[in-house]
Length: 442
Image (spheres, one colour):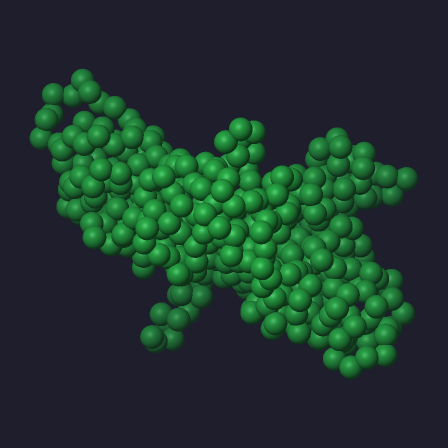
C-alpha cells in the first residue's frame, strides 16, 4: 500500500461522522462533559444556556437530560443523543445512563457506537493510598466502570478512551492521574481491552476537553476533542459474504412485466454487497434466484454495499416476506444451536429451560436456554460456574433455536453475530446476545 492509498484510507476512516457514547458510573460527569463539548464547540445558543440554569448558575448536565424525571432527580435515565461539529469533523454523541438498573439503555447506545468515552471520577477512588502500581486503586475501580468497559469491548466498540474527570478538585492531580491511569491500564490488560488513550479532564471547567490545559496533571498529550477528531469509524462488514434482512416488501402486482419478479425487497445490506446478476438463497426455504435489479435508497440503479439501504428485485417470483434473509449461496450454514455471550438485562434472573423470542435482523424465532455455561465476575474478571444470571450480569449460554438462523461469530460480523432475547409474556428486552466463535451444529 503506497502513501497516497494510506492517506486516502485514513481520510475515509476519520472523515465520516463519529458516533460515540459517554459511559461510566453514576455522577462521574458524563452529562456535564457532553454539555461542555456542546458549549465549547459553540453548538449551544444563548437562549438554550439561559434555560438550563440551576441555582442561578448554568448546569451543563441539563443540556442532555431531556426527560422531566431526569431534571427532577438529577440523573440520566434514557440515552440522549446530541449532534455537534468542529472544523474537522461531525459527531453524534450518546449520553448513556450510569445507574446499574439502566444498563440496557447503555447497551443499546454502545451497539452502534464507533467509540466510547468511559468517565472515571477521581474523587471516588483511593488514589492517595501508599501502594505500588495502583493496586489498591485497581481493586477499587467502580463496578460500573468495569461493567461498561467490558460491555463496550464485547460489543466491538472500536475505540475506548478513559477520561479521568474531576482532577481539578484534587490537590495532587498529577499523582492521582498517574495512579488511576496505572489502575485502568492494569484492568484493561487483564480484560483484554485495547484502550485508545487515557486523558485527565475537568468537564466542569473545560480543562483538556476541547482545548489543551498545559502543564496540568503531568499530561502533555492532545485534548479529548482532538482525540475524538482522529478516531476511525467502525468498518462495515464488506469482507463478509452477502447477507440481507428483508424489512419491507413493496408490491407491483399490477405490472404486466413477467420476465422478473414484481416485488421490491427493501432493507439494509448487513454484509458484503449486492449487484445485478448475483445469485442469492432465501432463508428460510433455500430457494435460489438471481438479482435482476438493485436500487439505492433514492431508487437509483447501483451496486449497494454493507451498511446502506437497498431495494432488490429478483428474476422470478419467490415467497419472500419481512424477516426473511437473502444470502450468498453456500456461504452460511444455518444453525439450530449457538453458544453465545449475553448481557442479561431483565430484572427476572435467567435460568436454564426458559423460552424467549430471539430477534435477528427482522426475523423472530423461539429460543430455549439449553444451559448456562458460566458467569463473568466483574471484580476479578474470572469465569465462574452459574445456574442463573441476575440483572446486568454477563455470562455464556447455549441457546437452542426452534428454526435455524444464519449466524457468524460477533467478532467477525456485528450484524450476523448479534441477537436480542425478548420475554414472550412481558415483551421486555431481556438480553443482548453475542454469538461466540465456537458455533456448533444442532
